[in-house]
Length: 231
Image 1 (cartoon, helix red, strand yellow):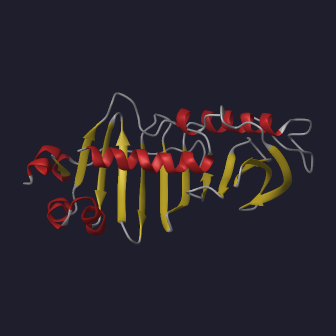
Image 2 (tube, one colour; image 1 turned 90 degrees about the vertical axis):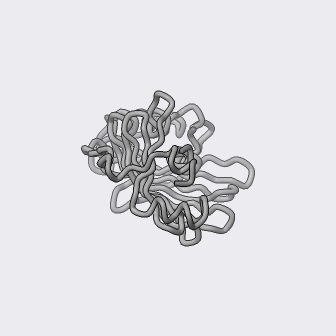
Image 3 (cartoon, helix red, strand yellow; image 1 turned 90 degrees about the horizontal axis):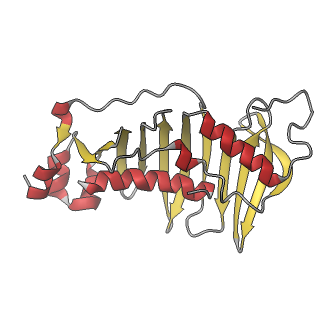
């Protein structure tokens, strides 16, 4: 069933859309990015965040007036797990290990996808989908730096108590703001997008921490062929 893998792709795409992209320490008040251009700071943040291997992302995106919440954790292997949903369309839990993905969702989500009969069939079950030979949640794809160009550095700020360099990218009426850690490694801490068709914000945390992703028990997994057959 392609729907669950599509959900994973949407989750990752949401994060990448907000971000705008498909080892340095501080000493007191010293600016670790002194003399660097905004583009160079973003390049360092992209590399550090990607090299961390694992991370957790939480965010919101406004899609045509409906706010979707998303949270997922990515392991160094590219395996990932998380949730995504909205009050109108319901909530889905997803995970991906290797090139195989799984989705388990509430009735409201399945009803929005395929009607009441599908919701009843999938209640409390995981739907499995074979991939295309690669992980959906590849950190290399999340932190690409090729689009982090023509940035401007603004006044520094704080994100959850952490001092951050603030970089902005403007394109027409759209503004994307990147917050980069100024203490420890220069990870991305937060990204906010305003003025686009799908504005939103994401925060990043738990860089380098272990993320355990395991496939669900076989007895809890639904055969996509049975869903297609309506049984």
